[in-house]
Image (cartoon, rainbow, N blue to C red; front, side):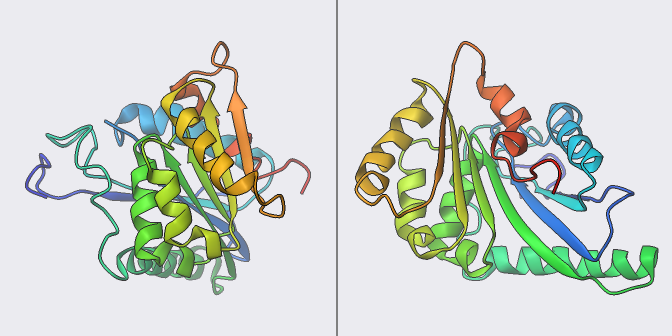
Length: 232
């Protein structure tokens, strides 16, 4: 990436010490504008992992660096210019699973078991969800959950739904701050598709803007979506 200060973007895979390979949830997190910096990890990703670890879940979190990261000259541009080529996102997830297999053998001396897949897009990360859904790879991977964390800007959610998610069995979670742009666009999608068909399942949460900031939604996206319910 010529617009990255190191000429290439990174990807980080975090696996807590208490995760086991028998049944693990792989969360793929698409960050927002200016993300992949210290705040993304110290204030957003790590606290959410710690909460999940306390509930005794096995989890791994992958954070691929987007073209709009803090380490680029385009910290809020080039949105959506990822996962557009056939098989791109599938190859990425396949590589993650190979690394998880190596971890399982190295740490536990046993093979990797079932891998539950979850995608999260926060803010500009919604454009990555949209691109992957339009290409179709997002749905071919058969994730259990897809979370839009105040990420339904423009027509991203609509394009994702018509791209492949209307044929997917993934649980769709849409978190928005009341009266924000993502709320406006998500409401249009809600009226266009979901209100007309009550048999369609989706988790649409409109959060009080006096309590929830855009950043706070990202900091609590996994708990808000209830991906890891306590006691399970």
